[in-house]
Amino acid sequence: MSLDGLSRRHFATLAGGAALGLSAAPVHPADAGRSEVRAAAENSLAGFPADFRWGTATSAYQIEGAINEDGRGPAIWDRFAHTPGTIIDNSNADVADDHYRLYRDDVQLMKALGATTYRFSIAWPRVFPDGSGTPNPKGLDFYDRLIDELLANGIEPFATLYHWDLPQALQDRFGGWMSRDTAKAFADYAAYVAERLTDRVSHIFTINECSRLVHLGHGLGIDAPGLKLPQAELNQVRHNVALGHGLSVQAIRARGRPGTKVGPAENLVVCIPAIDTPANVRAAEIATRELNGGYLTVILEGQYIDGFLAQAGKDAPKYTAEDLRIISSPIDFLGLNIYKPDHYVLAADNERGFTLAPFPASFPHMDADWLRFGPEAMYWAPRHAAKLWGVRSIYITENGTSSVDEPAADGNVYDLDRVMYLRNYLQQLQRATSQGVPVAGYFLWSLIDNFEWADGYQKRFGIYRVDFKTQRRTPKLSASFYREVIKQNSVV
Ligand code: BG6
Image (cartoon, rainbow, N blue to C red; front, side):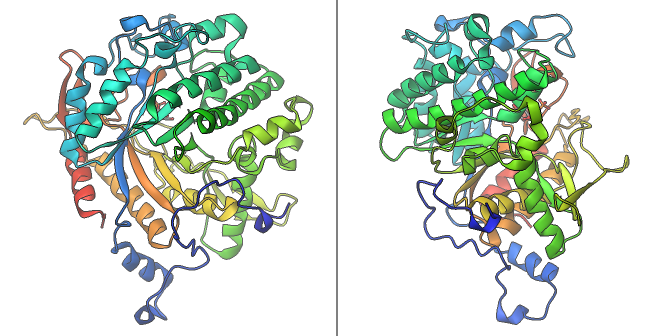
């Protein structure tokens, strides 16, 4: 299928009238003749759309603690974190930020920022301690309280159903995502949550980062459940996860309030034109479609494209046409987690139509080797999604960075590197929205320092510092920066 011929049928609702306008930046007559760079810079002064949503993001396992409270069952991350050698500082998330008890205080932190939305995740093992079957009667009580508290403070709740804390029971029973039964159990859980919460929650994300949960959890063994599966099994896990996404979209449509909006939150492979020429832009689009073949492309197109199948070869997943129909169930918005550029792309006269430039060792990165500093990722990723797949509503569901964050002599945390990172990424987002790329909101990762998976408490992503001994939260300089951005609805 030609790229330009892709239909927009996968989007159930259209974001009110925002023109894509992707072929050229809007240029005021007075700007005619000026360079595109200059025009884009001036457009960026226009700020974000008036109804832009500003928020922060967290996930249940990383902040809640209280792993044995109110009937919660064990999660695969409990088992994993308690296995020696898995977490860099031998820590676990038994307490984490104690958010289960301190959620009211944390809502006040959001309010102090002026945030209008909050993206949190629901812990499946609280709701179905055994993974499926009879729900725990107290399973959603905490989220009821949290949602009510958010609404009482003028903050709109956006809920993620799955941020990797699979009930251990499902892993034990049939190998978790290695089985389609987990995708079905996920849909049942989604249906139950939708029935209970969509009177107050109108936006639901299905799965956070299918690709990371597959590759780090089941390929590299870095995340729970710590498996290192061979390629064919890994591809089947990937397919089952995508199927779980699709089944849960259908379950939410069937059991949620009419008008509930649903979509994935994916960390797509971000492809950037190495030099901004029309040919390289086109090459970066082709690369985006191909390199996201196992996730976004199948979700948005309902097919495994040739490039993906050719690469998978004999290890391709087993699937039916009905599976593909389910996986590509219409969604209302696309959530994108954007931290870094993945590839810089050049047009090439080869079969693929592109080459990927290797990264020089000197390429800048933040306080983690993987976290490359490439703010233009924030411009190109949503622009490609809108152009390639006709996406009409996008949320940046995560963006942020870790920083060393040592308090200075006066006790303040001057996280200048995080402020620099955020300023540059947000300028690129503003460049995108100024050109009509339909981004409706932004969730900064993260509100508070938390349990950063295999990095334990060694990496801090919060804009509020957490002293994990006292649970004291202190705003960093970046919290002031973000409050100002929200207040101005602009970054310059
Ligand atoms: C995202 C996850 O991929 O990256 C978050 O959705 C995570 O849960 C964030 O905290 C940072 O990753 P890491 O590996 O540094 O903890």
